[in-house]
Every structure is written in structure tokens, then in C-alpha cells.
Length: 255
Image 1 (cartoon, one colour):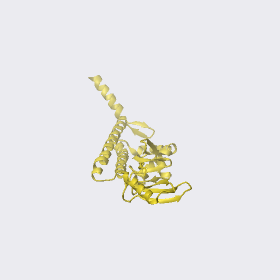
Image 2: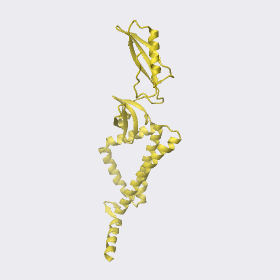
Image 3: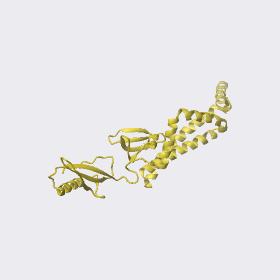
Image 4: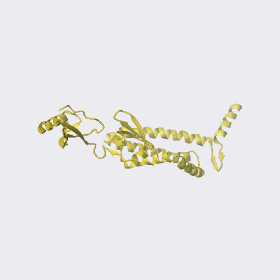
């Protein structure tokens, strides 16, 4: 029994005896407690934020983009609060490591400038919401629907179902066409060249009939046909239709 007690006492002393690193005094027990508690907070905050997004906010009728923004902000706020509170509850003197945190902050500032820039850009996207989850956007030669906005990056799914990870700073620094901003309805122009001998009335009726047969074309605002210009080989018309799914191509029956 004495051997067992000695072993228990040894590990107890090992875990609870303060270790001095420079001006910092901390025990292994407090470090382990802090790490375990932070891990539990991360898991719980993820579960809670997902429940709020998928259950509570859905019942309240909140839009998809707003739900995602609220969920993400709550999760990171909970984690940031835990990083401040949990170490103190575990017995770690935060004042004793303040100088260490300052040194690490300077190192991170120089070594992870890109990460810090994306972090700040992610906060701007979540708070100002120039783009939201569910928006259809164009960024350079990319276009697709936003599926997720995190602190570091944004997931864009193209019309071919390809997921593209975009750094948040690209969404802040570059020009974006947001087809869903304010109103998801978009008007598309479809050029239609016809022979010079074609009857304009029949062409107009045929084009409008084709538009009405496409289920994704909105009837309000109503489709229109414009005479664009006279070309050498054809008369060029434009069929103008409104759609509420800008990421999908409409297929029209031949007039």
C-alpha cells in the first residue's frame, strides 16, 4: 500500500507543483484542465450554434444568410470568451503571461499577416454582410453560390458542383457581382438573330411563347422582346426574361 501511496503522491506532486518558466508560474494540472475545458467549450459552442441555426432561427423564419452569420458570430464569441475566462478559473494567472501574449502577438503579426487579414475580412463579411450564405456571386472568372462563410475563408459552389475555397480577403479587396443582393431576381438578355424576311410580329410571339414554356422564367415582370439592330446577314432581336435562380441556365424551345 505504501508503494501505491507513494506513486499517487508522486503524480499528485507532479501535476500540482507550480513550474516556473521565466516569470511564469503554472502547474501541469492547470494546463490540462484548461485544455480539456477549452475543448469542451469548442464542442458545445459548435453544437449550440448549429442548433440555433438549424432549429431556432428556422422556426423564427430568419433568412439563410442571416442564420449562418448569427451562428458563426455566436460560436466564435463563445470561444473567445472561454479563452479569457477558462484559464483563470483553472488557476492560471493571466497577468503573469500577458507579456508572453504580447510577444506572441508581435510574432503572429509578422508571420501570419495573411491569416490576420483573412480573419478581419471574415469579421467584416459576417457583420456587414455584403455577401451571405445562399447568395449567387461572380468573382473574377468564378461564379457560384456561397455555401459557407467562416472566419478565414468562404466556400463557393459553382454550377458544376465544384467547391472552391476563397480567402475572405479576396471578397473584400476585389469587385464582386452579387446577383442576390437585395433581390435575387435577375434579368437576362438572350440574343436571337433571324432572317431579314421574317415577320416581326411572328418572331415576337414565338419568342414570348418560348419564354412562357420555360418553368424558371418569371411571368412578373413579364418577358419582353427588343429589336436590337439590323445586321448584314440578320435582324438581331433580344429576348429579355426575369429569373430568380441566376446560377441556372434556361433552355428555350426553338421558335
